[in-house]
Amino acid sequence: MGTGMSTSLITVGDDPNDALRRYRLERELTQDQVADLVRNQIHAQTGKFERIDGGYVSKLERGLITWPGQHYRTAFEVVFNTQELGFYHKRTRRDADEVAATKRRSFLSLSGLVGLPAVPMSEAPTRLGHDYLDGLDARITELADLQRNVGGGLVRNLATAEQRSAMALRGSSMTPRVRARLSTQIARLAATAGWGQFDADDETTARELLACGMDAARECDDLGLIAHLAGLTARMEVQLLRPAEALAALRRAAGPKPPAAEVTCAALAARAHAVSGNRAAVTRQIVVAERAFAKVGPDGPVWAAYLNAGKHFADISDSLFVLFTATGRPDSELTSRLRTTIGLLPGERARTRAGAEAKLATVLYMTGAREEGDHWASAARTSVSGVRSARITHEFQRMDLARLALN
Image (cartoon, rainbow, N blue to C red):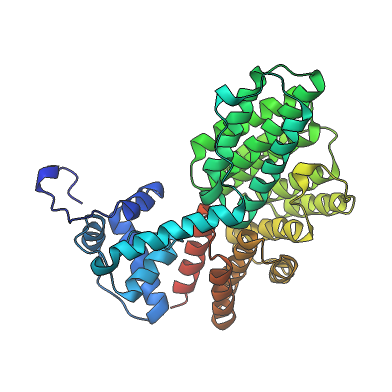
């Protein structure tokens, strides 16, 4: 796209679209690749083939075109999984800006996170006690819940700031028991912040945070939390299609651990083997995960609060789905497990539910069931409203490509 051209020769509109350009660069897409994705999405929506190319995307980014047609806007929103792409009608820009600001304020107000910016080091207490950590516990739980519901794109910076503030507290005077509790909180925050960063496609920061969390978990000798962080690292490696690295991460959690950690590690081992197409190993690990899940009680560790029946079914379904995509042969239980997963997930688990619905739609498309696939694709788009997750964006792109392959 003219990368050798002097910037002085590039025409820029009154208001360059930095938002669209930022989303494209975050996903490491060229303007031509974005045009291909949008063109395919428009065809999926309307049956029409539009003549959109990288030059058109360039005009949008430079502000020469600020208000694409409705089908174009919708297609861009689907491709990037957001409505905040910087498009505006020139006569109503001021109104649009005010609406966007109001939405941001409403989100912060409703989520209760207005008071969550990092605590400056100068405000860290000289003597740290359990009372202070009680408030931190509440914020950690709220951040973790919010991330599971709306994705890492909206929560990662808040969680990262809170984690860094907690790290600064280590310089305060405290008893050994308080220090051990603080280490646990640092590890939990690193888990939430690390996965949030990866969910927003920042792998480098995610690895740094998860490594920091692992150090904190080892410092307080919390075997369950060590397994939880190893599991998150393994989950990241599986997403990146690196099964050997995923299994290596899980080996760091070898040894006795709470049932919740055993469930997570076995389910992720199943997914790692699924990437390699090892059906027998996948089946063995699913059996281990289901036996461990039967032992999970209501008094499990606080970091395992996310592990309910819906999440467990989602993890097992993910293993069978990955196996299907690796081998091209659907497991006889796959669609039924995905339907069960969707039924078990409440509305507030929007990200996990949307992922299961998108996977079900993908399987149906790949097996020729277009009408039912369209139903679940529509349901997934409804569930994902308000969610900011690069993982879901990738899932939707795979779903859309599966539908296009039917034509």
